[in-house]
Amino acid sequence: MNWKRTFAIVFSFSLVVSILSSFFGVFYWSALGSSYYGKIPLQSADKLLKFAKVVNKSVVYSFDIFWAMEPGKTRVQAYVEGIKCKNSNYTLEVIVMDGRIFKNSGKFSFLIKRKDTFLYLHVKVTIPNTCVVNQSLRGPGVIIYAKNE
Image (cartoon, one colour):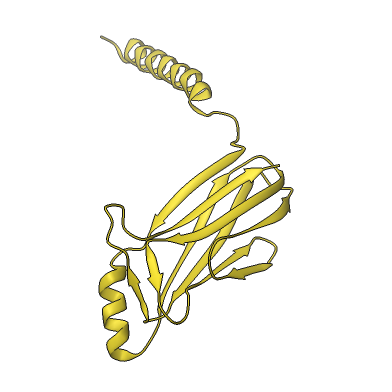
């Protein structure tokens, strides 16, 4: 085989693979979502809360959520599942892309207006050391539900 024929075969093969992957890739990417649901697990919360009692501190979890989503008015609902508090409740703080802060203890929702094709949230959960983890199979976690209106 000469080098011209080898080059032509390799070029043809790579062209076919490129076209096929482009074709199937178009069907893989779906339209932007209009609603999303997520549970972010609070890893080792029971051990951290036991340690927090000893040192008299609170446990803080912080994470980011990034979802591809249709622009427009979006209702976001947030709460913590699987944590039981005695004296003082946990604090859930959600910071949106424009810097607004939504802070509450318990289940709450808020409405934001977005022009971007994504939803970005920074979430911070502060759990006082008087709280305990409810025993369940799923464990504690932060529930975030976002839906366009």
